[in-house]
Amino acid sequence: MTEGISMSPEELIGRVDALVRQYPIETSDPRDFLEARFDAGLAWVWAAPGEGGLGLDSTLQALVESRLAEKNAPLPFSYNPIGIGMTGPTLLAHGTAQQKSAYLRPLFSGREVWSQLFSEPSVGSDVAGLATRARRDGDDWVVDGQKVWTSWAHIAGRGLLLARTDPDVPKHAGLTAFVLDMTAPGVEVRPLRQMTGEAEFNEVYLVNVRIPDSDRIGEVGEGWRIATTTLMNERFSLGGTMKRDTAEVGAEVLDAYRAAVDRGDHNPVRRDEAVRLWIEANVNNLIAERSAAATNRGRPGPEGSVLKLATAEYRKRAANFLVDLLGAPAMLVASYRMNRPRLPLGQEVPETTSAFLRSRANTIEGGTSEILRNILGERVLGLPGDLRVDKGIPWRDIPR
Image (cartoon, helix red, strand yellow):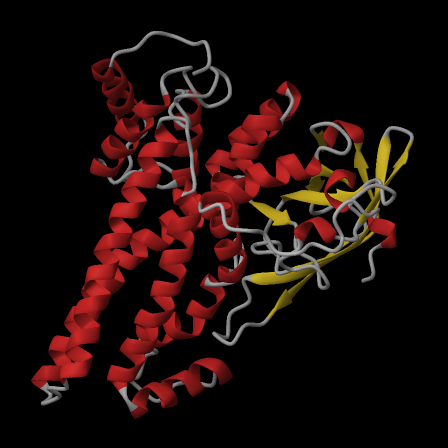
């Protein structure tokens, strides 16, 4: 807990209610409301005053979220998911006072959307092997390289960039983190079209991009420690988001199965699968509650990685099951979705098919399922690690 003011739960609820009275949810601009929420210290109550918090115990955050949910308040995550779920917590943990003052308020309100520039074409899962270089030039750093699978980069104003500042040390030791102005000269964003027909991921090219040293996060060479903070928050954030969706999918599975039965499909194998998927949805909900409780106590653990892995794999299996129930029409609709022509009059793309096409990304983003299994096996279960042939070798000498 950060040093702040003393406040009882009742007083905290009173502050939430006062905020809603001052900025009525039904008539206020959502971003105005979120700015006022930040100024009231209700963004992250455990953060310091002036940084969106009140210096209270982190367990009180759940009380704020619950009260705001009752009021149907706008969710900051909806306007800036990467900023809220990943880069905001990183700035709170590692940013300077000047960085927090400049970036946290517009980040929380969604006035300034953020992206995260980690993955590269040749190092998707091996983030520490990245090749984007940052070279010191007076009070600036000059960056050259390429990033890929950068969500929201096409609308982001800023990004959290991980770059290599020392190629002569082992790969984890030569990284540094920066705040990148996505509108700076030399930054080019190219959207990548997905099989859903959408383009939420991007590739980003960086050519002689200048970043002031004041936008360096942490010390030179501390980039991996900062990236680890971001990745842990990313897995918790993605897991929590998918948990909310998973509850809906679990109910949809049962509804779809009942509809199939009404059509005369009494396949006992499908009945068994529907019940298993519904049970798994509820188990994932319990994992999410446990993960949230650990985080609210300030002791986030492996539950976030477990939740992300479990929900990603669940959503893929559930989507497969739901498309199976649709039968042949699912293939027709999927074809329309991928090629994006005008649909026949009165026909809409079912959310089921969209979820089926998108579910593959769930097992890749935020750490692939394979990487998460390695992490949980080695760091939680204590299983022997894989043989790492690049351990202790300067990055420059690692074959690429």
